[in-house]
Length: 284
Ligand code: BT5
Image (cartoon, rainbow, N blue to C red):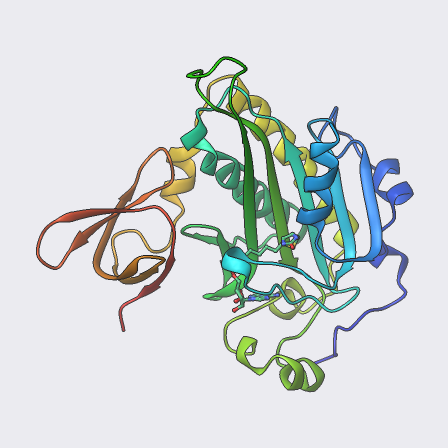
């Protein structure tokens, strides 16, 4: 198979002008900040958020020198290969513990875009992954900033929320250069190009994603929870799982996820444990 490393095809290029030229949204993706290379789009957008950037602002890069996953893990993406995009929300209508609903709508919107542009249907995996052929296609990193009211005792609110998406598009994790550089990803990661056997336009994926985010975020603001749809598409629900959580390793059956995105695990001793964050894998 072809290497799927960067090409000069127009379809594969990103720039603020190209992004804005084809954008059909009212506010999601506006304004757009594009960098050929930057540390992390989430970090840049956080600075912009603190300077008052509006809801919908998009920070996007062709390459990141310090791309992050959760718990400061690294996100790997060679130049020209991926969609690395962060969106700013100011969801003052959400309760402070409902931030995960933004991860839900953006995960669903990435899946919508992949299906619209390639016809493939990725699976969702709790809490923040998209999978194809059982391997990781995309990861989402949601970060929240809180503000307390002016008078003491007032409830704190979500002042800003940044949702960063890393989507593997035109790269082959089995190719020799990528295997050499990141051997641990070869069996765990996958790209749209590998599964479809074709190059996929990052620009078309991005436009589709932003459009779906806007529809879903408008619905969320109007009071429609994405929880049911998101939960119904999670691959791990109902299975015997092992969860590596920040405070320990837990085994059991992943029964449900609640409205806040927490996973309810029926442990081997019958007790139900609520897990807010962690990595889940099916028991072998
Ligand atoms: C995530 O973290 O999956 C969230 C990734 C979010 C990346 C985006 S890119 C735009 C924005 N700016 C940023 O700086 N970040 C966001 P987590 O669940 O912790 O998964 C991280 C783990 O996934 C790593 O430890 C690797 O094992 C694996 N990984 C790294 N790069 C990968 C890739 N390209 N494809 C699949 N898996 C990868």
